[in-house]
Image: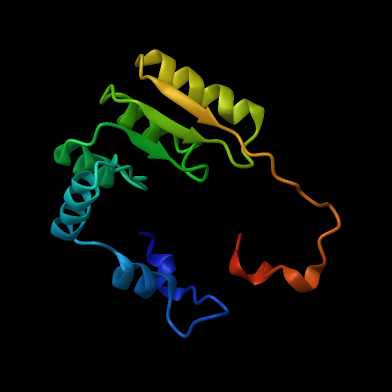
Length: 141
């Protein structure tokens, strides 16, 4: 996680994003236990890796497929890393551009990874009230 995360405090918390993520993260043994429990219910364990290390952990666990969230769909190094495993992938597009989606598909096809692209039928308003948006959560400085 970025060192900057230690300095970002969401408006609904007195803790930094870093602290929240650290407290919320599953240990490797906890995640493996969760996977085994899920499978004991005859369900498929599916997890979204947000880093190559997390993808490697899931591969080590022997997951049957990967889920790539829309926020990671244009993280091409991660997408390529996961695609090299050759396992099925569910990839969410979210609000990614068609250009980004095409690039992601090209990576998946390059490695012959079976995949499913999930698109969302979201209503996006161009009339969002500024009072409902927390603009100071991002600092492009």
